[in-house]
Image (tube, rainbow, N blue to C red):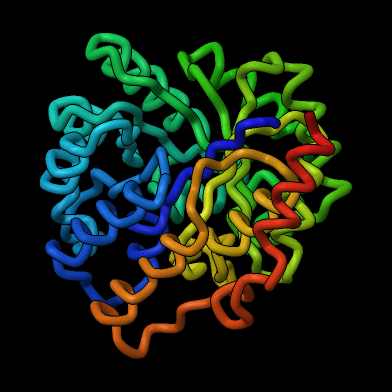
Length: 312
């Protein structure tokens, strides 16, 4: 039975996209409850200036709290080398920096063109190495941009190679705008892996904007992807990419993977109970998910057990 890592990005990617600020205590309860349900990695926040994203102002406090949870890999997003220094000082296990494949989106998102971002990646990688922190680069808008339109796959490959040379230890392909389809996921995953190495591209960050999220996960699995970002209740999207709503719903992803006999280590029933924390702290905020709405299938446990037997 294969092991698949689900990285919960709701406390960062989910919350940065809504205007309301979730109370610190609620965030802590969310993180603790997900870890108790078996989630092994959580992106707890982002080291960006609070004046830009006040929702992320308590990230250092959340890192300190989450580091006290045994077995949890605590990661954050950093926009630049200054953020990387803050993350390293906070004691994160890992950090990732967004590198948009669309230069227009890059300038809008982090106010830097490709050349400037490669310099930030170089500096951030050095900081991460000095502190023994894992350093990943998220290849944002890899499947298309709401501002530029199509993003050439050869450009994604070229920039990935340059980011590897700048010090990236790992990559994720990010469907920032919800444009990806399964054929494109397969094609681009193969191209990037061929350019930077199979072990360097491990992660997909997918949105369910057009209902293709889970289909894209299956395509990624077929290409050897082992880590998938998701957000509880489908919270989030990119605030700097118009129309880019709908992160992959963690609950739906867990149901599908468990039914396929893939080991996530996550208790679905316990995970579904975590939603009450969001509902209480963010009343009126849309929270999505087919599985929570319909309820787990009556023969869910039996299906999962059959899938495990057939996979071994």
